[in-house]
Amino acid sequence: MRIILLGPPGAGKGTQAQSISNHYKIPHISTGDIFRHNISEGTDLGSLAKNYMDKGLLVPDDVTIKLIEKRLNESDTAKGFLLDGFPRTVNQAKALDKILEKKGVEITKALYINVHRDYIVERMSGRRMCFSCGASYHTKFSPPLIEGICDNCGSELKQRDDDKKETVLERLDIYDFQTKPLIDFYDNKSILIEVDGAQAINLVFENVLKALGE
Image (cartoon, rainbow, N blue to C red; front, side, top):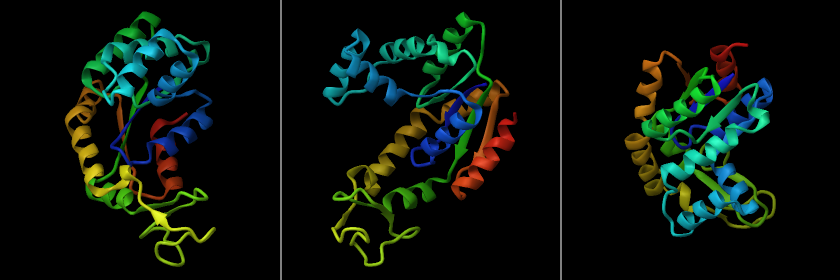
């Protein structure tokens, strides 16, 4: 089973990816993990990626694609894999097709976790963190006993910069422009399956399993 995980930021892809990986016993491959691994190992591609990341720039497609190809050639992907964070663009998707064509395989399913934009803004902008003990809260879904104060250690709760409304909206705009066209790309290949991500985590996973099957 070779799966691509699609969906907007804040759709809960990371949580579902781990559950899918455990259930089907296939590696969860995320671009972030690949970058970090290659940077820590000091590989040539890792050093190249780090140069861009240190400047706050996006890692170019050709570097990212080479890192993905290197990872997909490792032995643990022989029985399948789950790709999370790649491809992000149609250009990357076409490059992935070529990589897999060399191996004589293709993508089994593109799993699209769909969550309405307004719900994502509410979900992400309501997050609050305790930077002292690491506890997390949500102003609506899991508020602390005392507003703005951590239940565990009494420290002040803060909002991460990534969770501020303007940042969330900016990330969603980038997603709409760059990544959303992938939905049509995989739908045209008749391998797209869609799951409603605006439900409880366990219900989303149940629907994912129904959609993917055994």
